[in-house]
Length: 114
Image (cartoon, rainbow, N blue to C red):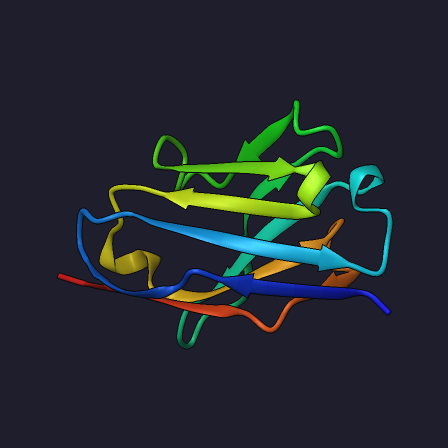
């Protein structure tokens, strides 16, 4: 079955960096585009980043553009989200998804203190 497992979250201070990982299995990872979503307390889930199946095309929410970088290693069936210059408003549970929400990981908590 499809599995998506996020890791790398934690508690950091504003301005710090984190790298999230999403380990995928149960589908042909290299043939699927992937997305990162996040859900902040009391807010709707929002799209953070997109990456095409070959990794050549990426897109970002305006709120993270220039600070976050999504990448993937198809040989390792893993997607990453490099998060730099973190802000308190980035605090959320971050979710990896297959395509646009076909499957979801369990999420990893990112907390950014001011």
